[in-house]
Structures are given as structure tokens and as C-alpha cells.
Image (cartoon, rainbow, N blue to C red; front, side):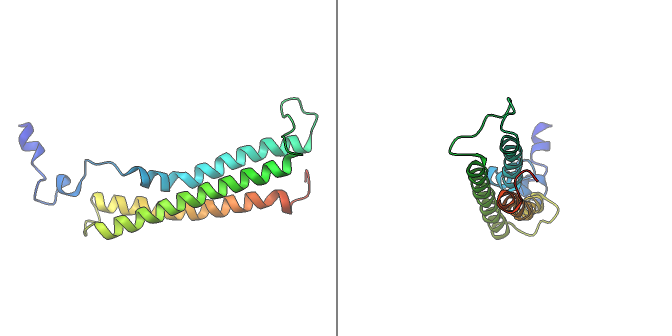
Length: 145
């Protein structure tokens, strides 16, 4: 009976032929979650560094090295923008790979992979913009405003 269940989709366009048992590739997940994760890290680090910038006597937030919080804020912003851009590049690469290599199975594994790749491209674009705007905030907004 197990052999009959295992071969049920073979050659018929069913789950076995569409790759229904396979999970999406790691690059699809990196493209989907990389930029939001980079922005989250940037936001948390920026709050901690801005707190030390605005109240230097706060015992829980020691002063950052290299002459203040502004260089540290800009460095964190630059690293997170680079990470979000890399995640976007991975998402676009995955989207092109899925679009070129998959057949016309909009409801099966190919459709799921295309959706995951397209969502990764969209999320990466939105969160790359968020990272850029968050990185510019220390320069554009007055200190402790």
C-alpha cells in the first residue's frame, strides 16, 4: 500500500511530478527574510546607540567608541543597507531562476516557488528603502529630537 501511495503522482502531474514534497531553497528564504531581518537589526541597534547619544550618563548605554554615536549609527546603517541589498540580489536571482526553470503549474510547487520569489523581491525592495531612510535619519534629524 505504501508503494501505491508513493507512486500516485508519478507521471500524472501530481504532487510527485511537481515536487510537492520539496521545501523551497535556502536562497528563497534568504531573499524573503534577509532584508526585513537587516532592518530589524538596524532599528534595534539605532535605538540603543541613539539612547547613548542623547543621554550619555545613562548607565545601561555606554558611550560607543570612535568619538561618539554618529559614526556608529552610520556604520550600522551602512552594514544593514548592504545586507538588505544583498538579500534583494538573492531574491531577484531566485526569481529569475524559478521563472526560467519551471513549467506552467500555477497551483503546484512551481507556483509556490514563484510566489515566494516574487514576495522576496517585493519585501527586499520595501525594506531596502526602509534601511536607507533609517540610515539617513541621524544625519537629517537634529540630535535628540
